[in-house]
Image 1 (spheres, rainbow, N blue to C red):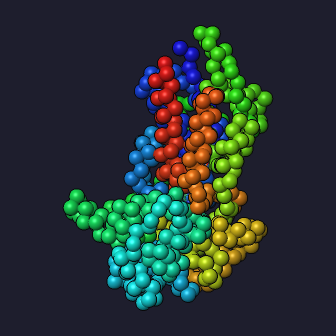
Image 2 (cartoon, rainbow, N blue to C red; image 1 turned 120 degrees about the vertical axis):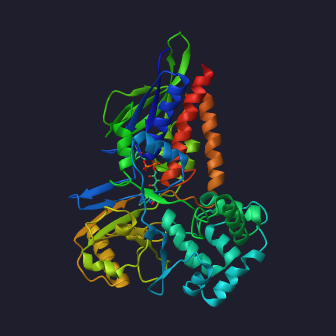
Image 3 (cartoon, rainbow, N blue to C red; image 1 turned 90 degrees about the vertical axis):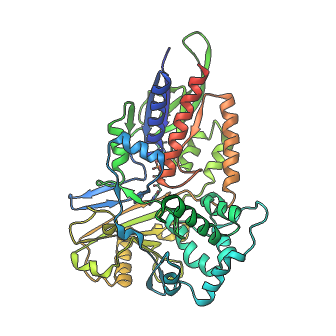
Length: 484
Ligand SMILES: Cc1cc2nc3c(=O)[nH]c(=O)nc-3n(C[C@H](O)[C@H](O)[C@H](O)COP(=O)(O)OP(=O)(O)OC[C@H]3O[C@@H](n4cnc5c(N)ncnc54)[C@H](O)[C@@H]3O)c2cc1C
């Protein structure tokens, strides 16, 4: 039987996961399959961009790491032959800036109460959460509205707003709770109260494991932040190095076009012609997986599925700028042990937050030195994306000096500016997902298979993107195998 040809567009973690899972499923089903991955950029990795500076410093221009416990990532890490690097214990301490001061977000209720993050009135309001009636109806609700309704406006402003900045570089008033944090919506539905849910899950965890270690704290899901000794990009790089299929970098797809081709037995079968910018030889594919950003997929789908393209183009991707500053050893005393801090709007700083990278993972800075990373712009401060690189670097340096009291000049200054960084799951996102799925079904009924991977629809995190890629790649091959 003639091998089918699957073309995957994009070699971020989604595309590589899709290609690897398709290849594994094909081996499993005995399906002859040729896979080509086309990547517009010069290297694989997409947003994962780890850079070594003379072997002394290691900076991340995109994601810091992933939460351990995602089975799809475990499979990929095993395929890549890498050892996972869990974050240092210090990463458990997270801070928020209020009134210009760092305040730790303690998981222990008494210590949290003493942190000063909430006023006595704000605390009291949050404690009443148990008695707030559950949400009626299935109308969408923003993260901020959900927080205010259940826990009060202070929690929404001082904790949930910064949390949304940290995950989405987004605006809590625009992001949909059920789309972005489905577990929180589920907990309210199931238990009627977040505090009741937390209590029930703690008791269940204690019964099951005799420990509370796997229960997520109030600020986010459980799981250990994880990366690799050479940075997060080590995973896509190793997956590409070991790939039993073709990966072509520097090959941007500009158009996909449906055709009906003569198959080997004489039957006529729908296929795709995949046109690239850099080569005149277009590829003919039996199936295509788009593992690109929503706006990039929209451009490719414009002529074949205008409705789906319009939906994808409607997903907002605000800019994000990432600044890494490396300081000499004397600076270390200015930073408490921790992951980093988030900065609510209204504080003096423009940064969305700072991460203390040298405390997160071993090997990010020379011994005793400090590597700090600041995030700027996002949906809440788009104008910061217009700054020149020098303005960005000097602003970050000034804010580190003002917030932490570090007066030393940095030994390392570097930045990455993403014009369209992270998809925003805004109000109405789940309805949009539904319309995209309907549109794709209609497209599949007329043409050869075309699937969407990537983080535009089903989860923005690195682990979720990997899981979606694996699911799509495997499902496509199993569907082909079932047809034969
Ligand atoms: C600043 C920042 C910080 C982040 N921090 C975290 C974090 O700490 N933890 C976490 O879990 N997640 C984080 N994320 C999200 C995480 O980076 C993504 O979930 C993940 O990298 C998405 O992978 P992907 O493969 O879906 O997309 P991408 O990595 O965006 O890859 C898409 C690829 O498609 C290619 N492409 C686009 N158009 C074409 C075309 N026409 N032809 C060929 N190729 C094309 C692009 O060049 C790119 O390589 C962060 C994101 C950013 C931007």
